[in-house]
Image (cartoon, rainbow, N blue to C red):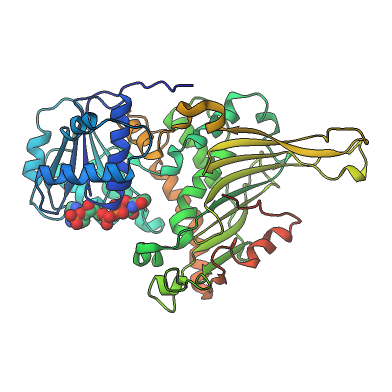
Amino acid sequence: MVSRVIPVEPFDLVIFGGTGDLARRKILPGLFRRYCSGQMPRDARVIGAARTDMDETGYREMVAEAIREFGGGRACDDGTLDEFLGQIHYVSIDARGDSGWAELQDLMKGTDRVEAYYFSVAPGLFGDLAERLQSWGMADASARIVVEKPFGRDLRTARDLNATLARYFHETQIYRIDHYLGKETVQNLMAVRFGNMLFEPLWNSQYVDHIQITVAETVGVGGRGDYYDKSGAMRDMVQNHLMQLLCLIAMEPPARFDPDAVRDEKLKVIRALDPVEPHHIVRGQYLAEPGNEAAQPDYRTAVDNPRSRTESFVALKTAISNWRWAGTPFYMRTGKRMVARSSEITVVFKDTPHSIFGEEAGRHRNVLSIRLQPNEGITLGVTIKEPGPGGMRLIDVPLDMTFADALGPEGADQVDAYERLIMDVIRGNQTLFMRGDEVEAAWSWTDPIIEGWEARNDVPKPYDSGSTGPDAADQLMRRDGREWRKVSP
Ligand code: NAP
């Protein structure tokens, strides 16, 4: 099945931080793939902007290298790459100074196309960029800004940042990115829920036993130790990515698939979230990989802070106090250096009210699992009779919709989350971006948890690299007579 490509209108995209890691790994290769697919118009321009003194040729070489290294996906011939590079420009600019702004202003002058400014720089520069875009006359009504995470480190800083951006841009011009929302499966989750009659009637506490969300990474903090140690898993992952997944799984059907209708429903979920009891949350810190301590050190060594109390793992249980979900626990966990890289949402349905097959048939439950990575897809576990003679024995089989299998090679050549989201920015579609009030509500729920840890001087529990986190995370589930899903690659 070949996916339909609808070209977007011509645009100019300025990438502040155009020499950085995110630009090189995701944004630029993603744009190139959209160019190859025909979605990015031939005359669209991409302007890299950073302090490094470099001419256009040097920047184009850097972009070509990044595309070769991180391009992936659909093959494109060298001719197309040269054509694409012809659309790339570079301005040496200082977000905190005056250098480069006149040049950028010149480049952006007199075009009547979509203007987008991607803030792919440290969050401390977001306000400076917004202010300078305005003072140099580039914050006009047609401009859009894309703001990377983290969006604040608590409610106060998120509010301040919202207020700063609101001084120069209207909310409809601000695209707060959470790349989890750009994943194909996440959107498919909405299609499955709201495009089928099958699931929605069962999507409530009467039929759902519990819901699990796991985002497991095998990597450690890597070169981000300094940033990560000031953040931790709660701020870096739960407040944004896991919270967004929770919203999509739990929200009421919006009246329309439009940005504010969807975001209104997500906001209601966050506001209905119960506070987390201290005994319903487990924090962990990873230990070194045995025998490989130099290459894969423990968390504290990796962040160069022997007394660090920052968590690289969180598991928690919460609930949503509304009519649909009262009584259904939601379990979330995320961590680094875990056994496998896997992001999955699992909806575990309740037992049948009565088994006509007797005790020996065992306990069987329908489980809907939505895999975000790797192997994006959706699987529904269904109970059937074990084939063959010998009586009625029941087994669970998966109804599998791994997209790569179901949609063939073309369908499997999926669009990366960043590509999709950038195209949405150009189209002016904010559905998959977080609204300011959503971000603030998420911090309102997260802040007391973090403040509680600080007040109690809570120390994260150590866990083995390559495991599923501290034992206490398993106990959190077992206490309720439940189990985490296996984390498998
Ligand atoms: P990075 O590799 O450190 O790149 C930072 C970029 O900002 C560089 O291009 C740097 O270039 C530029 N820069 C720094 N100071 C500047 C200034 N005063 N004026 C203009 N440009 C300046 O960071 P990154 O990993 O790409 O991350 C960028 C943003 O994306 C951050 O907010 C990060 O939290 C977020 N993010 C990154 C990832 C990721 O995978 N990397 C994932 C999610 C979110 P010069 O030094 O040449 O100025």
